Length: 205
Image 1: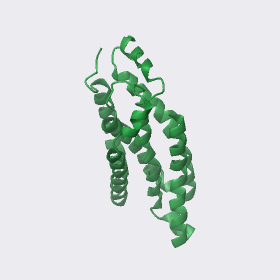
Image 2 (image 1 turned 180 degrees about the vertical axis):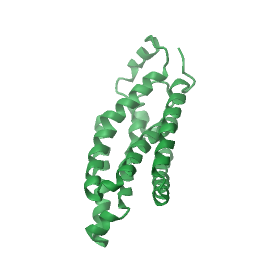
Image 3 (image 1 turned 90 degrees about the vertical axis):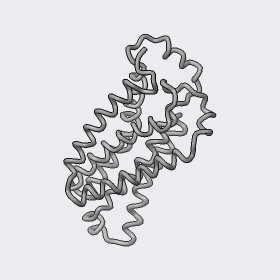
């Protein structure tokens, strides 16, 4: 998994800066810093669906039987913990440095927008889970099956990132960032509870 994830993470770091440098060719640094090019940070979220998809596979997939015999009050807790660990170990180490650099480039005026980006990353994680994951437990399938996953779904999730970026731009234009943050927090809380305690028909043991 790491051999597939790390190249994607590297791409997620580099691609926003490639886009920023392209913008600098057409405008000055002052124009860039005072504009809305910070929305380019959404390109770093494109890797989220692909990483979530890979959580279903492992070279040691035959060992997933242990999930079925382990005492647990809810099977949803396993994937809940897996996605939380993924967010902390993979997503935040990429997004936090990017956010700090973007704050330096665009100034503190965009801090609310960057909070929105973090929350959108969590929402995208949950949506990707519902789009891709079929088994009640992570690491339950042979890696070669990952190649058979639908390319259309992957590109569809990338399209979703673009839609979320457009929504963010519209929210920023009308100045409703605080309201959008509140909506995202409530959505994350409700969807996480519903997803991992009534998930895939395997909510209770």
